[in-house]
Amino acid sequence: MANPQGFRSENSAYGGGIEKVPFEGISRNDRAAPPMHLLLVDDDDHIREVCRSVAEDCGMKVTDVSTAEEALEVMEMSSVDILLTDLRLPGTSGLELLRRVTQIYPDMAVVMLTQYGTIDSAVEATRMGAADYVTKPFRVEELRARLQQVAHSVELKRENRLLREQVRTRPGFGGLIGMSPRMERVYKLIEKVSQRTHPVLILGESGTGKELVARSVHFLGPRKDRPFVPVECSALVPTLVESELFGYTKGAFTGAMQARQGLMESANGGTLFLDEIGEMSLEMQAKLLRALQQREIKPVGSTERRTIDVRIVAATNRDLELAIKNGNFRQDLFFRLNVVQIKLPPLRDRKGDIPLLVTAFLEKFADPDDAHRELTEDAMRRLMAYDWPGNVRELENTIERAVALSSGPLVSVHDLPSNLQYPTTDRAPEKEELLPLDELERRAILSTLRQTGGDKQAAARMLGIGKTTLYRKLKQYQIERTDA
Ligand SMILES: Nc1ncnc2c1ncn2[C@@H]1O[C@H](COP(=O)(O)OP(=O)(O)OP(=O)(O)O)[C@@H](O)[C@H]1O
Ligand SMILES: [Mg+2]
Image (cartoon, rainbow, N blue to C red; front, side, top):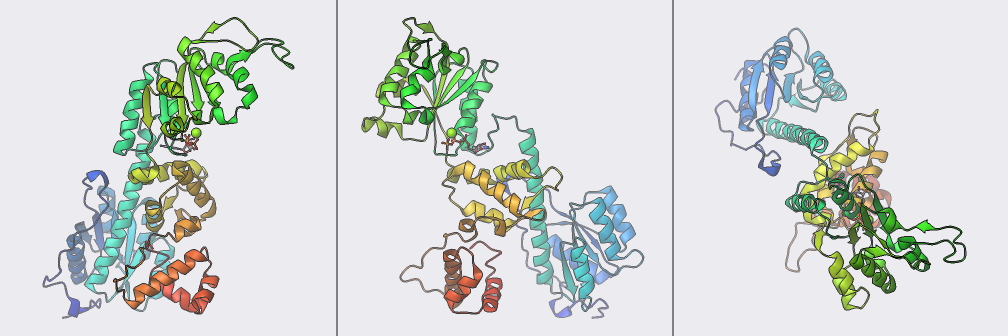
């Protein structure tokens, strides 16, 4: 077949024969994403026919034209996601078209079709911002794979943009982020209890957002203009707890030069947040219980009782029921505090919220002058695979560190701490499980890298191979790129 552009005819797609491979986009929340719109620019009819057929098979909507000028017109009239253009075009060249597109439509992904032997232009194109290039002659499968890959990253970008908008527009619950059903339940509960004055007990592992919830309960309710007073129970000096909480009179003890109001009284009309209540001594628990039951306090050194009206919100990461069993927490105080309980899920039980949290933290830590940052797909996969013992606080710190380490707009696996770069998710092979040699080799390399904390030189030494060989194998097994 006459084939001026060098399309390899043995893999011809002209006669059909392309198996249908559905495009696998990311479909979170079952949102039906509109199809990708691909604009194809080539002056060769055959190439256009083949490319159209491949792109349509990938589930894309295709518009094709034969010049850069026509392409620019299409872009002005409709929204294009991917531009697939020949490098050599009559009139305005493909490179020039690329240059304009990157300026006017920075979100558009551009894939260049280049002639075999013009690798320099291809490299130049990627340097100028092309997402990828395909060298003619190409195989249908190759083009399909490239297009699917590019479509996938466009989809990710779309998703990220959507998430960013959601972060901005979602009515805030004191900065709480997450749209998982478990978080939605938490929001509903907060909304309900914030309107009342019952005590609230917030439970959850460290870093799950207990303090944010406490603040939301206060600031969403009718007491929002009154004080919110947090008390770190674990930081109170045992001998001073009583005077801190209830205040004291002048001369109540040595050094009490004048009377001082306690934290409880300063929260009058508002909310007292007793953080880490599980750390309070039994003696103090008794005094607190009494104050809560009688709604009055007696400052140290005073005989007079004062009525107080505070809403109590308490939090702990301790298992209070176990503490009661062990005699470290008063059951009557527990009943008093536990009128409404809000239990926060650990992050590992709501991993679907990770992308949303990441987007918010990337924005939070980005330099205002920088272009917004994004995580590479691999980096995101690592975050999703990790267990997050330190919950949202650990994720927040991880992103802060990654933003500080990354140099471009993309935050990659290399910017993550080493325990995330080389996760221990590989199952040990079952006794009877026979693995191909290359899989054994891949696992050996991964486990060695884990042991050396990512130090490749040391890993090569331990494996008894040269550093170059290790690099080749890392590439071969895509260890830097795929989920380990
Ligand atoms: N759902 C969330 N959305 C946004 N940020 C969150 C969320 N949960 C926690 N954070 C962030 O994580 C950090 C820890 O949150 P917070 O102090 O509320 O946790 P905590 O449960 O009180 O932890 P600890 O028990 O260690 O005191 C904070 O910086 C907070 O902003
Ligand atoms: Mg806390």
